[in-house]
Length: 193
Image 1 (cartoon, one colour):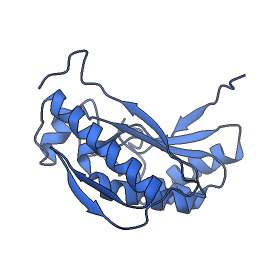
Image 2 (cartoon, rainbow, N blue to C red; image 1 turned 90 degrees about the vertical axis):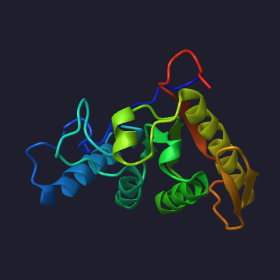
Image 3 (cartoon, one colour; image 1 turned 45 degrees about the vertical axis):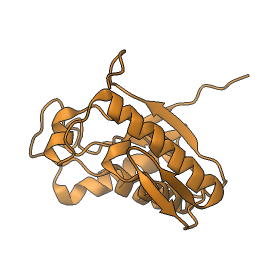
Image 4 (cartoon, one colour; image 1 turned 135 degrees about the horizontal axis):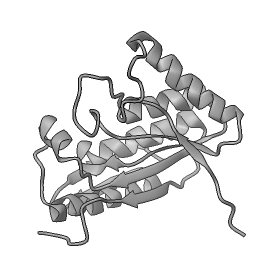
């Protein structure tokens, strides 16, 4: 029988959940939150892969997801660690495979890979990524997942795709040779070219 599991999102600023906390105190707040979850009944802790606040960009802090994942991996010992969801096009997938595998190593094999096509248009444009069509974002997601699966299962990845061209010969295995993929997209019901 399947068991229902529960997790928590770590405050990291995206939803304005660090407003009023001195920047010097933000990491201890995030870390202590995750440590309490690790010592309690929670099964996982999660972060968002976003670069600035919603519903509108502000000058409030929003801390980067994979940097936090590695720090939380070193600060906890039991809870699974995930991001909801990493936007594929924000990082080259071969590089992302290495970052995720390194974080998995630090955590002792506790990373959950949340991956999606990306949806927050203002964020895309603000960081110079443009804002490709839903079809292109999903195409990048497809090729990126292929690259990451290859890298994690064989230690190398090669793809001459429409969106990505990689030829990586570097060991990037997940610690337990498996990655839990959680794919999602908020690009709507229709896929456009």
